[in-house]
Image (cartoon, rainbow, N blue to C red; front, side, top):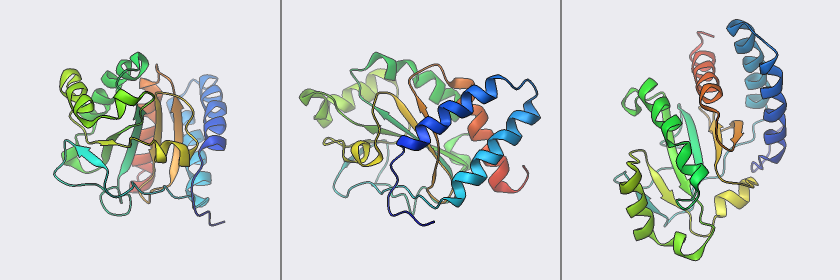
Length: 198
Protein backbone atom coordinates (compact mmCIF):
# COMPACT_ATOMS: atom_id res chain seq x y z
CA UNK A 1 0.00 0.00 0.00
CA UNK A 2 1.61 3.28 -1.10
CA UNK A 3 0.86 6.31 1.06
CA UNK A 4 1.83 9.81 -0.08
CA UNK A 5 2.62 11.25 3.35
CA UNK A 6 3.23 9.94 6.80
CA UNK A 7 1.13 10.96 9.74
CA UNK A 8 2.67 9.15 12.69
CA UNK A 9 -0.37 9.25 14.99
CA UNK A 10 -1.24 5.58 14.47
CA UNK A 11 2.43 4.58 14.61
CA UNK A 12 2.76 6.39 17.94
CA UNK A 13 -0.02 4.26 19.43
CA UNK A 14 1.46 1.09 17.95
CA UNK A 15 4.84 1.96 19.46
CA UNK A 16 3.29 2.46 22.90
CA UNK A 17 1.82 -1.05 22.59
CA UNK A 18 5.18 -2.38 21.36
CA UNK A 19 6.95 -0.86 24.39
CA UNK A 20 4.45 -2.51 26.74
CA UNK A 21 4.95 -5.85 24.99
CA UNK A 22 8.74 -5.54 25.24
CA UNK A 23 8.49 -4.91 28.99
CA UNK A 24 7.01 -8.41 29.37
CA UNK A 25 9.89 -10.06 27.49
CA UNK A 26 13.09 -10.87 29.38
CA UNK A 27 15.38 -12.30 26.70
CA UNK A 28 17.16 -9.83 24.42
CA UNK A 29 16.83 -12.16 21.43
CA UNK A 30 13.06 -12.32 21.87
CA UNK A 31 12.87 -8.54 22.17
CA UNK A 32 14.87 -8.16 18.97
CA UNK A 33 12.61 -10.66 17.18
CA UNK A 34 9.54 -8.67 18.26
CA UNK A 35 11.16 -5.44 17.03
CA UNK A 36 12.15 -7.04 13.70
CA UNK A 37 8.54 -8.15 13.22
CA UNK A 38 7.45 -4.54 13.82
CA UNK A 39 10.10 -3.22 11.40
CA UNK A 40 9.00 -5.69 8.71
CA UNK A 41 5.41 -4.51 9.07
CA UNK A 42 6.18 -0.80 8.93
CA UNK A 43 8.88 -0.92 6.26
CA UNK A 44 6.32 -2.70 4.01
CA UNK A 45 3.77 0.07 4.53
CA UNK A 46 5.75 2.39 2.23
CA UNK A 47 4.76 5.41 4.26
CA UNK A 48 7.58 7.81 3.53
CA UNK A 49 8.77 10.83 5.38
CA UNK A 50 7.86 14.25 4.06
CA UNK A 51 10.99 16.21 3.17
CA UNK A 52 12.24 19.32 4.90
CA UNK A 53 10.90 22.53 3.38
CA UNK A 54 13.40 24.42 1.27
CA UNK A 55 14.67 27.69 2.67
CA UNK A 56 14.79 26.55 6.30
CA UNK A 57 17.81 27.54 8.35
CA UNK A 58 20.17 24.73 9.33
CA UNK A 59 22.80 24.60 12.06
CA UNK A 60 25.88 22.36 12.48
CA UNK A 61 25.93 21.53 8.75
CA UNK A 62 27.27 23.36 5.72
CA UNK A 63 24.09 22.92 3.65
CA UNK A 64 20.46 21.82 4.04
CA UNK A 65 19.89 18.07 4.32
CA UNK A 66 17.25 16.10 2.41
CA UNK A 67 15.38 12.93 3.28
CA UNK A 68 15.93 11.37 -0.15
CA UNK A 69 19.62 12.26 -0.32
CA UNK A 70 21.41 12.67 2.99
CA UNK A 71 19.19 10.39 5.06
CA UNK A 72 18.98 7.61 2.47
CA UNK A 73 20.68 4.41 3.61
CA UNK A 74 20.87 5.46 7.27
CA UNK A 75 18.79 5.00 10.36
CA UNK A 76 17.75 8.56 11.20
CA UNK A 77 16.47 9.85 14.52
CA UNK A 78 14.43 13.04 14.20
CA UNK A 79 14.24 14.88 17.51
CA UNK A 80 11.24 17.22 17.52
CA UNK A 81 12.10 19.73 20.22
CA UNK A 82 12.00 23.32 21.31
CA UNK A 83 14.76 24.86 23.37
CA UNK A 84 12.48 26.20 26.14
CA UNK A 85 11.19 22.70 26.92
CA UNK A 86 13.05 21.19 29.88
CA UNK A 87 11.99 17.65 28.88
CA UNK A 88 13.60 18.26 25.48
CA UNK A 89 16.86 19.16 27.20
CA UNK A 90 16.63 16.05 29.38
CA UNK A 91 16.88 13.74 26.34
CA UNK A 92 20.02 15.38 24.94
CA UNK A 93 22.27 12.96 26.91
CA UNK A 94 20.29 10.05 25.39
CA UNK A 95 20.99 11.37 21.90
CA UNK A 96 24.66 11.95 22.76
CA UNK A 97 24.92 8.37 24.05
CA UNK A 98 23.41 7.08 20.80
CA UNK A 99 25.87 9.15 18.78
CA UNK A 100 28.74 7.80 20.90
CA UNK A 101 27.64 4.24 20.02
CA UNK A 102 27.12 5.13 16.36
CA UNK A 103 29.33 8.09 15.44
CA UNK A 104 27.95 10.14 12.53
CA UNK A 105 31.20 9.50 10.64
CA UNK A 106 30.32 5.78 10.47
CA UNK A 107 27.33 6.63 8.27
CA UNK A 108 24.87 4.24 9.96
CA UNK A 109 22.93 6.62 12.19
CA UNK A 110 22.10 10.30 11.87
CA UNK A 111 20.43 12.39 14.56
CA UNK A 112 18.68 15.57 13.40
CA UNK A 113 17.06 18.08 15.69
CA UNK A 114 13.86 19.51 14.22
CA UNK A 115 13.27 22.70 16.19
CA UNK A 116 9.51 23.20 16.32
CA UNK A 117 8.77 26.36 18.28
CA UNK A 118 5.90 26.77 20.70
CA UNK A 119 6.36 30.49 21.37
CA UNK A 120 7.23 33.39 19.07
CA UNK A 121 10.71 34.00 20.56
CA UNK A 122 11.57 30.34 19.94
CA UNK A 123 11.20 30.86 16.19
CA UNK A 124 14.21 33.20 16.02
CA UNK A 125 17.31 31.53 14.61
CA UNK A 126 19.69 33.53 16.81
CA UNK A 127 17.91 32.22 19.92
CA UNK A 128 18.08 28.66 18.61
CA UNK A 129 21.79 29.03 17.83
CA UNK A 130 22.42 30.36 21.35
CA UNK A 131 20.61 27.31 22.79
CA UNK A 132 22.58 24.94 20.53
CA UNK A 133 25.81 26.45 21.82
CA UNK A 134 24.62 26.57 25.45
CA UNK A 135 23.61 22.89 25.49
CA UNK A 136 26.49 21.63 23.34
CA UNK A 137 24.33 20.19 20.57
CA UNK A 138 26.61 18.95 17.79
CA UNK A 139 24.21 17.10 15.49
CA UNK A 140 22.39 18.88 12.64
CA UNK A 141 19.46 21.06 13.68
CA UNK A 142 16.86 22.61 11.39
CA UNK A 143 14.69 25.55 12.38
CA UNK A 144 11.13 24.77 11.27
CA UNK A 145 9.62 28.04 12.59
CA UNK A 146 6.09 27.29 11.42
CA UNK A 147 6.32 23.67 12.62
CA UNK A 148 5.22 22.40 9.20
CA UNK A 149 6.92 19.02 9.54
CA UNK A 150 5.55 18.68 13.09
CA UNK A 151 2.01 19.32 11.87
CA UNK A 152 2.41 17.27 8.70
CA UNK A 153 3.49 14.25 10.71
CA UNK A 154 0.89 14.69 13.42
CA UNK A 155 3.43 15.12 16.22
CA UNK A 156 1.62 16.25 19.37
CA UNK A 157 4.17 16.95 22.11
CA UNK A 158 7.76 17.79 22.94
CA UNK A 159 10.02 15.92 22.82
CA UNK A 160 9.10 13.35 20.19
CA UNK A 161 11.62 11.10 18.48
CA UNK A 162 10.72 9.65 15.08
CA UNK A 163 13.08 6.89 13.94
CA UNK A 164 13.29 6.44 10.17
CA UNK A 165 14.46 3.42 8.23
CA UNK A 166 17.05 3.66 5.44
CA UNK A 167 14.43 4.53 2.80
CA UNK A 168 12.91 7.31 4.89
CA UNK A 169 10.06 5.23 6.29
CA UNK A 170 8.92 6.06 9.84
CA UNK A 171 9.47 2.93 11.96
CA UNK A 172 9.24 4.03 15.57
CA UNK A 173 7.97 6.96 17.62
CA UNK A 174 9.07 7.71 21.18
CA UNK A 175 7.21 10.44 23.06
CA UNK A 176 8.59 12.18 26.13
CA UNK A 177 11.76 11.37 28.02
CA UNK A 178 13.24 8.30 29.70
CA UNK A 179 13.62 6.12 26.60
CA UNK A 180 17.42 5.80 26.32
CA UNK A 181 17.53 1.99 26.46
CA UNK A 182 14.56 1.59 24.12
CA UNK A 183 16.03 4.12 21.66
CA UNK A 184 19.31 2.22 21.54
CA UNK A 185 17.53 -1.14 21.25
CA UNK A 186 15.35 0.08 18.37
CA UNK A 187 18.27 1.65 16.50
CA UNK A 188 20.64 -1.28 17.06
CA UNK A 189 18.01 -3.79 15.95
CA UNK A 190 17.15 -1.72 12.87
CA UNK A 191 20.83 -1.54 11.89
CA UNK A 192 21.17 -5.32 12.21
CA UNK A 193 17.93 -5.93 10.32
CA UNK A 194 18.68 -3.65 7.39
CA UNK A 195 22.32 -4.71 7.12
CA UNK A 196 21.14 -8.30 6.74
CA UNK A 197 22.80 -9.53 9.94
CA UNK A 198 19.60 -9.55 12.02
